[in-house]
Length: 377
Image (cartoon, rainbow, N blue to C red; front, side):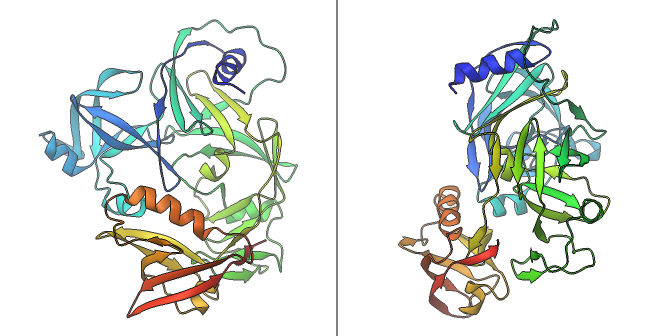
């Protein structure tokens, strides 16, 4: 569908009419969405976009650069914030250290921006790699045909939530979280209630190790598959689910959200969902080398290695420094870590049987040839 068609779809299903504004070209930072934000006429700075955040965040370094005095409760008053079509406005921002997050993403973050801006709907067009904020023009609902779009609720923390049907019969309210890279996450008690904890079913542990399911609840950080997920008239078969601690809110993350174009109208209570590849989707098998990026430190990426994985069997260990992946040498990774990360991760998620030469530095430099295996069928 064209962008014009997408805009018409939104207007036809929402409870309000919208004026279209110019989109913001987002940056894909290891699966997260980073947008340019101008603060007090300076910048633009790199801000992570978060659908669940109610108050913007700024780093101490950025606050110091802008000469913003920190008030009690680690807050600063900002006179001017601009991102795309959002009108220039003042904000109270929380001051937080984002060093660890910046190192994990390979991008020097200046802050975090809430996706919800009062008076606007936010649209994520993952096919065009764009974020668009559309203004309210009228409170009069336009005539619409077809199925009623799913209702969007906002919980006490300001996070958007939508009803999701799991395994054909279990309805849950899940957050829509653009910071989480997983496709789906549920607490262990919910997984037990929907019958997803089958003895003998394959699990992927938090460190990437392969395991067989037990009858008891899996530990937090484990990944497994559930039978089915339905949201907004779209069905996803066999989605991978991250296990959360009981009490943590379940969510749909970018792993699934990227399959759609989304419109979140917080104040109108509407979620617009347009699948990019048909209304029936299947989460493919997870195959790879058991090797993933961890932190970007001093110009290089460190890695995490799953036990009993091809990378572990070849002698690589968590904390090793990645020097080369195939023909991609990483000695200059400090110049553009974000672009290197995307290319590295593309190569590390390989089909079963694919081979890859990797050079890494632990106690000594080691060059190994890895063969991808199924990690979670």
